[in-house]
Structure formats: structure tokens, C-alpha cells
Image 1 (cartoon, rainbow, N blue to C red):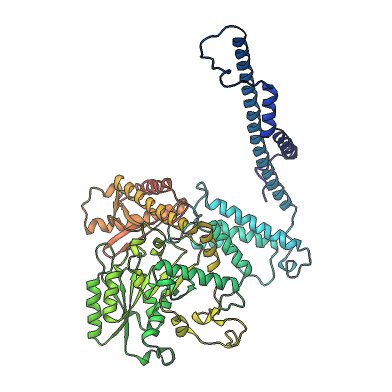
Image 2: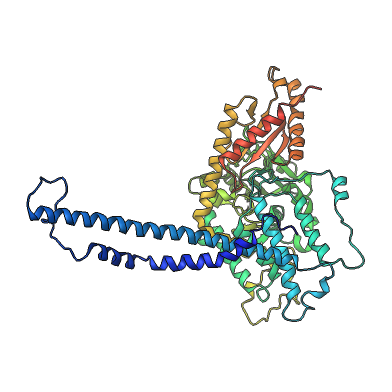
Length: 619
């Protein structure tokens, strides 16, 4: 490993003595001793306020005048020396700070030098714990090496001089890496190199200029929580193997239900492996609510069920219809208005039409923050329709749920308390590490009633503790990753006010981006006033700006965003997503959720896209 930029050895040897001298001198310059010094300089001269006159008083004659001037001279001298001593103390503090910095550099350098003396080329995994005897030197050295690589990756992820990615096409990347799994073991040196290579070609989703997905950024406390979780390597299905994490999950889920607006945090919930599975839980719970016999008798026990969601909803709702056996044709799409919100009038019409065709509606899913546009469906009006037809109302707030943490922006979800279930992904707007997704239901007990299989080898009824704390029978999976700790830990570190600040800051960045788009020639908004942090826009290159809007221009505009994105990926210093939608040709979808992003990064997006887009030609 390279030891470039290591502090010179002769400087390192002097650090301890410099620090010791600075500490000694600083101790001698403490305030109490300075005050004594002042007393020594000033002597015991003590005059009343009437006797000590200011220099601008009328001149006096005789001994009193001489005495007064003498006192003034002593006081000036005293003050000067007093200031000198305090100035010396401040200088010593600066020296001490520099010494501490030098000492830290020394320690880093020594660690690097120590690593050079560790030879992993002849060591193998069988020489690590649990096979290694105490003290576990090999294990500690190996893990320290890995951690150093992770620290460096974290540093690079926040350095704007580092690339967001080093892009290679699949076959090229495959040629750069040794990906085969061998029959025999590789050395630990090779294993460490494998770690470095994986990090080298990984996309830095925590980089301040990564705007490609809804989940971006890197929360260091959440990262620490994920590292701890992986170290513990526990399973969430029973209290006996995950006591602390099960209690954390209960408390956090209850708090999330309170924020939604359910009285006293009533209901239940569970952390699921992503929003797609959380939405699947909602569909299963809704079907079980109205037709519990399907659990044992199958879907043929009931006539054709159907469900409704907007055509801008996440594809996971259609996927859920497929998985539960309803069929994708019976996940009926509802039209949206001009800004991507579900139209209540079309929902009413589609429900009536489905009933006329002999279908049985049971669920409506409204989206609180659509994936592309960031639209919030009018949940209050939708809730009225669901009550009228006795339908389960699900709110997919996987993306928009983070706005609930802000007093300024939670109005975007007004009425969400009327939902029967809510999907909420803290790994999106709240910035938790992937994955962290919750399904919350208003009716306590329905998750277990719907999903329980009562496996006697896990969920014994005669355990010596309160078995209501076993969560496995609420889940459709058996093994369940601990997703709660990283969220709980970052919530402790930020408080709700920290999440609120993040949400407000992201909205400020969105407003700045919209301002720049409107002010910069060649940029056009797809939707004029986006209500969330999704900003959709086109870049129109100079060669197209005189062309009239219409199908012919759209045909060419459709090629511009892919052209720019290809160059962007090759350059590697920015990532922004693009896609078509409905009748619109390809446009950029800028998603602002990265806590590392600043106003300057928003400006960089405009500058870089403009720079790359100007090279587009009508060939």
C-alpha cells in the first residue's frame, strides 16, 4: 500500500516534545497567574475613583498631579503586560492545536507504516476467528485493513473532486475484474484486493452530485448502524434472538403511526425489504380483511377481485396484483390530471364500471409522492369514495412520507390519517441506509391473522416470555433483516427537528433549481410548479431552439437526454436520471434528496448539462 503524503519522520519525532512544551507553557499562563502578574506590575497602588482622573481632565499642579500621572503610567504599563501575557496564552493554544494535528498525522502515518509490515499474501481465512487463538492478531489486522478501505470510500464519497462513478460497459468491466469463484481459497491479500476493486467500480450514491435515484446520500450515523447490524447478524423473527431490535421496532413504528395521525399510534406494522414488498403486505391485508377464507381455500373461493391505482403509481401495485393471483388486468389504472394526481371523478367511474362487469372492488391505492413527477393524490376525496363503497384505502407514501417530518410541508399529506395502511420508506427522503421500509396498518392484529403459519419450531406458544413480541408470524418471510437499528440510531442523532431541517433544505434546493431552469436559455420545465422535490425538465440544444414545438421536434428532443446521459456517465462527475412519460419525450428527472447537496451542486447540474448538450447535432 502506498504511503504517499506521509508526514516526514523528523517532524514526527518532534511532535511529542512540542506538545509537552506547549502544555507546560500554557499551564503557566493560566488566568490566575496572569492576574498575579498584573498585581506585581501594578504594585499595591490603590487610589479612589476621585483620585484617579482621566488624562483629558484639566491640568493640575503640584504633587497631586505628579502622583496622578505616575499612576496612569503604571496602569498603562500593567495593561500592556497583561495583554502580552494573554496574547502569549493564545499563541500557545494555537501551538497546542497544531501539535495535536501533527500528532494525529503521526498516528495515521504510523498506522500506514504498520500496514506495510503486515503480509497477507501467505495468510488465509482459515487463520482468522474462530480458528485463530487469542489474541486474534490476524483477525484484527484483517478487519482494520478492511475498515481503512471503507473509511477511504466514505471520504471519497463526499469529495467533489472524486468521480461519482467510473463507468465501463458490462463486458469491459467484466474484463477488468476477476469475478470467478475458485475451487480453493484465495489469500487474504487477494480478498483485500477484491474489496478495493469492488469499491473502485461502485457508484458513489452518497456523492453530493448523485441525483439519479429517490434514495441517495450517505448518513454516517445510519451507516454506523448498518455496520453494527451486520456485525450482530441477527434475525428479527423472534424476541429471543433479537430482544433489543424487536423493542426498537415496536417503539419506532408506534411513533411513525402517531406522526401519520392515528390516535395514540394505534395499529401495527413491520419493516419490510423495500416499498414493493410493503405494498404487497397492504394488498394481502386488504384482501384478508374482506375475504379471509382465501387464505385457506384460495382465490377461487371468491369471484374476480379488482383494485385501483393511478397510472402514475409505482409498478409494484400491478406486481402485487400478479403475486396474489388477482391478475394485472384487474389492477385498474385511474387517469391523472395535468400534474400527475389521481382524478377522483375517474376513480368513481372505474369503480362503477367494474361492478357493472361483475367484478368485486376491494382496494384503492393512492400515491403520496409519485416516482417520476412527485405528485400527491387527493387522498381526502379518495377516502370519501372508499368509505362510500366500503373499500380499503392504502397510501403509498414510500417517497412522500418524509414530508410528514416537516411542519412546513406535512400538509402535502393532509388526510393520510384516513388510510387503512401506509407504506413509508425512511431510506428515501429521510436518508437512512438501504434498505429501510415500513408497512403500517391501522387495524392491530390483521398482519398476523393474514400471514401467520404458526411454525412450532419457532413460535412455540409456551415460551417463558410474552410471545406477542415475536414478530415472525406477521411477516410473509421467515428470515428478516434488522432494518430498524440504523433508523433508530439516526433518529436519536438527529431528532425529529433534524429530519425537518433536511426536508426543508431539500425543498429550498428544489426552488433554486426551478429558478435556474427558468433563467437559463435552453432549459424547459415539463411541469411548471412541482409540489415535491422531483423536477422534470428538458434541455433543448441550440440546433433545435428555432424549431416549432410539435411531434417533429419532440421526435428529436427524445434523443437529447439519452445523448447527454451517455456523456455524463462517461465523464463520471454527475448522475441525473431521464425517462419519457405519457405523451412527453425523454426528459431529465432531477430528484433532490441527498443531504450532502448544496446550491453550488444544483448550479453544477445546470452547467454540466448545458456543456454536454451543446454538442448535440442533428445527424
